[in-house]
Length: 230
Image 1 (cartoon, helix red, strand yellow):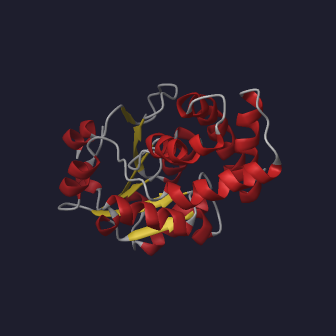
Image 2 (image 1 turned 90 degrees about the vertical axis):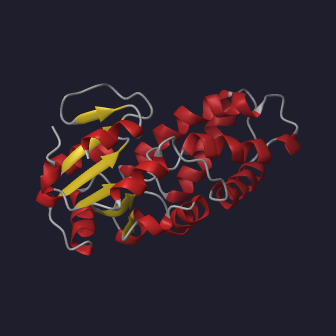
Image 3 (image 1 turned 120 degrees about the vertical axis):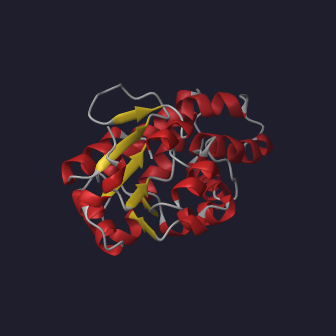
């Protein structure tokens, strides 16, 4: 059960939690891919790309690949899996265009604005994200949610990625808060929830991509469901 009387600060993940990464990626690829006349649809591409992207983000969180490898290999493996491998030149061109365009799309999960509007009246709101500084700032600004947050800490700015406890400690320090007064809301049990709980924070797991269920904290399948607990 959430002990809301203890909470002064709420920390959110951004991608897959507030900002709908899958919907925005799909919209971006729908713009990028058609001029290449590939023999598959943008929807077919996304079906293959999404799990590959998740897998390579996990490697990135674990410091097993670099930013450049993440951006290149996830596309390389997608084209290979579709049976249409592409040259390095084509992959780099698509990757660069994808990064440029992704943050211009503004799909938020249903309930995002209503939840933020309610919570900002009672708590201080913050972001902890493994995304890249410039890209994440653009995402929030373009989606109209930047002004809800006081502290926005990216892994790039912090110099360390979730689930390392150090990035949570850094965010708490920037917010002049403590684990006992803080709640973390995120989509990844590994990156968001386990670390927050280990540090002594409360947590809500917004299970937006059907991770295994657990009883380590409150698990919800919609942002709207969070309102009744806070």
